[in-house]
Image 1 (cartoon, each protein chain N blue to C red):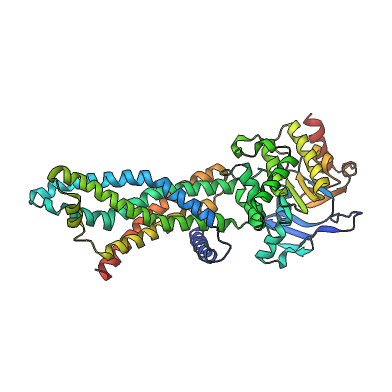
Image 2: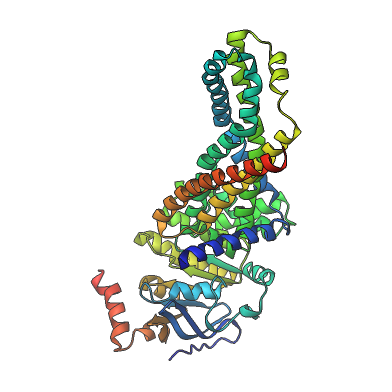
Length: 257
Length: 249
């Protein structure tokens, strides 16, 4: 069962029959996915199951070996470099490692995508945009700090703020709670939901954290062995006797406790 | 053997991409100026110190040999030939390879393994243009300036030794020094320093931009950048000296 359906009507991401291999290792073996406007879709799976490869294919950072990717009405295969760059201004990507630029302070990190993609903006407008996104992630006081001075949770938030400054229509989160303490994880989960409401974004959230999946996902899909095994609301996905799904749930919610 | 040729092909593609991107807008003026500062101003103190000591010590060491033939008056012109034709460009390039080349390799390598380069890419900024083109341009333009500056400082070091022994005036020293130096020597100094600068920038950027395997890869990128660029600089020096002596003299 690889086809994911939704009640929504306006798709922003369409993946069809996506295959991706690295050498002899088949990572994705025919994945289909529809993500609709305003929807948060969580892709669950174990480490190495191909979740990050999937999200990088959506962002155009990797090309699939087979299949088609349509994002905001654009077929990625048909896009030239400039077209892809223009499309990427409408997509926010939150990296697992936050990927803040070490040599720049928080302000410069936030300004970086803005000054390059909206060259007409004056200093006052740039300052206002920086202040707004910092306020949205609750870290206004960090504006002059360097990334090395921030905690893991703060780095994640600034990484998200950096993507929000371009007001994206789609947010892609790669393991947003990885490496965070439980309190910071809950804060990031809340932030993801707030971003969806405030910026009206559609999101794909890649995670192996079931708490994150339950808190942020309107829809959850389970990726294993290169294919989607289950899809639906969180409770529906785990209402099964499939041992691959059951084991995943038991480890996260029972053995970890 | 296959890996070796693939590596050669990757370097060729990387170099070709540099020449494609360098002329195509948008131009990253601010980052290029920032790199001029990083490569140039931040290297001034070490270049000054090394140049001065090189000139001083080389003169001191040459003095005894020339004195045996009663030819210490040749010291200014000998130093000018040694420093302008060989020492200034070569020593400058080796210092910049160690200081800046390793820095570029480590910085880009670190950015690669922590996904910062990918982050630039997804925020619609061309990371190659921003990181690679700016750094290669900076090393290519600044190394000739630093080499010329080191030549001057090296000559001052030589002058100090000559003045200490013969009380020769600065004007007389430089008049004697530049009798044997002509426009071609200065031209060759600038051109070959630019080639060394390009080599340092390209090697550092290539190794850093293609770093992998986490922190081990970062260390390897920094190390390889220095070793390979120094090796290439010596090979280039040999080729350039042969060409200049055969065709320009």
